[in-house]
Each structure stands twice: as structure tokens, then as C-alpha cells.
Image (cartoon, rainbow, N blue to C red):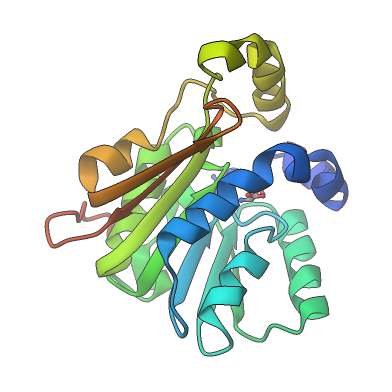
Length: 217
Ligand SMILES: C[S@@+](CC[C@H](N)C(=O)[O-])C[C@H]1O[C@@H](n2cnc3c(N)ncnc32)[C@H](O)[C@@H]1O
């Protein structure tokens, strides 16, 4: 399995150094709002990191719902477990795995989840289309899939491009990957949002019977 080394060393400090409040929180808040999660829903979070999405998801799904949290870094998962324990959530399942080589059968099979999301992760993966295809395949028809990722800021905010490039470089992201385009082309009822001068891109689409990619190995 590919283990992202930079998320091994920085896991304990990730929440402090990730510019969550001034910059990146806006993307996860917008995505989880657009996912319109309901009480009792089962949610897949690919590349969950330290679990910064969890509280936003938990507020909507409640104790009868569940989160399946996947990450390739054991150290990031440890931080996510710590967050989960201290919040008293009993509905989070953790899986240490590479998002680009998941076997849908290990996650419960096709159509298992009501919703799936990946925030600031896909642009780190050379084979992100495979990870996103799996997210779509394991989401039920009528379920929703969300991608939050980064690009160069646009318009007047383009002056911030060197800073955006630096943030992506430090995190290991390809600023030109634009993985949300696969949501635009593969899903229906696509809703979009952006933040921070277009640097943060959010897409949420609905899965229908024609969305499947057949990622079962
Ligand atoms: C920038 S952090 C984002 C974490 C979280 N999603 C968030 O919004 O704060 C990227 C995360 O993706 C994970 N990651 C990178 N490549 C991965 C892969 N191939 N499979 C699963 N997780 C991966 C890293 O370990 C890290 O926890």
C-alpha cells in the first residue's frame, strides 16, 4: 500500500498547520451542506485524515447513522480515533487502506452507502479516478457523492496563486488535477460551490443507475 509519508510525520500537528479555520473549513462546510445528509444515513469518508469532517457529518446523521473512515496513514487514523473517542461517537468504523485500490466488497459491496465524500484528498492521488469511481460504485442509486479540492484562485484572487501553489506543494497535491470534473461528467443533479477566490472547489452529484464504473476487482 502507498503510505503518504508527509501525513505520517505531521499527523499530530495537522489540525494546527492545515489552515483549517482561515481557509479550508469553508469547503467541507459547503460540501456537507450540499450533501443534505439525513438522520440514520451511512457515509463514506475517503482520506478522512484526522476526522475534521466528522462533527459536521455527525450533526446531521445522528447516532443511528454511521461513518466509514478510510485513510492510508495509520498516524492520521490515530488522530481521527482520538477525536472520535473524546466526542463519544460510537458509530465510526476505521479502515487503513489506499483509496485507489479498495475492493468494494470489503466496504459492503456496491450501493452500500447513502453518501460518500473526499475532502482535499483526491488531488494527492496519482490514480484519483479509480478512488472516485469506487466512491460512486459503493454509493446507492439516489445517494450523493461530494468532492472538495483545490485549484489556482481565479479573477482578482489570482494574486494569491503563489500562496495556493505553496499550500498544495506542502500537502503534496497536484493543483491542476481538478478531480471534481469527474462529478460533473459522471453524476446527475450536480451542485457546485467555491470559496476563497475559487481556490476551493466543491461538487456534489447524485448517483443514478448509469453512474457505475464496475470497480470490483
Ligand atoms: C490533506 S489531508 C485531508 C484530510 C481530510 N480529508 C481533511 O479534509 O482534513 C489528506 C489525507 O489523505 C490521505 N491520503 C493520501 N493518499 C491517500 C490514499 N491513496 N488513500 C487513502 N488516503 C490517502 C492522507 O493520509 C491524509 O490523511
